[in-house]
Image 1 (cartoon, helix red, strand yellow):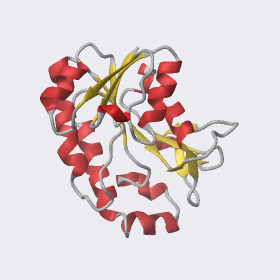
Image 2: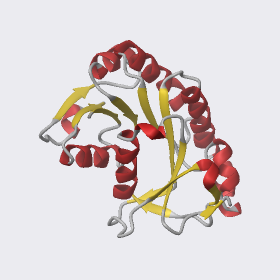
Image 3: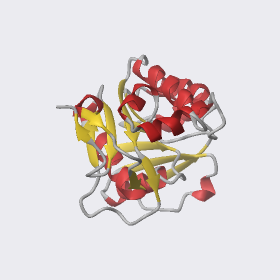
Length: 217
């Protein structure tokens, strides 16, 4: 596939880029600072911002899917609501129907499946951040594109798990106990699998650790 990654220098986006290139996919790395993207075979770097829909659209021409892995400051209550409409407009301009949005577990109705302690965090110091994420999720769902929204749990820099990540549709999750934390590499592995799997279109998917969930059944 030819995959465009927004946020290609971030903790998650950079790892998806590396894994996608290693797997033989062609990658368009769209980044605010092109020099921050390490040169790799099969990777074309385009410098630009999420606010520039014309540049986004030009960069997206000919790609099969766009992965949106960008985020604002935890205190910015509108970053994704400002950025995502530009991405959606650019996708339409470029004729790209497939969009995968990296949200965060705790946004919107996903918080109902979190532990009580986690909900205190999501609704307390991170309330503005998660409110913005939830609003962006709704924009994605109403875009009319072939969207997928992915909700990773807390992420960290650590060796990948031997068992790998768990990816489940939100409705199959009964509870995410405690505060499970997933290595960035595992989140990237899950995202690349989602981007390349057309059966995930229209799905809202939770990405967590093997023990970081219980079934809704």
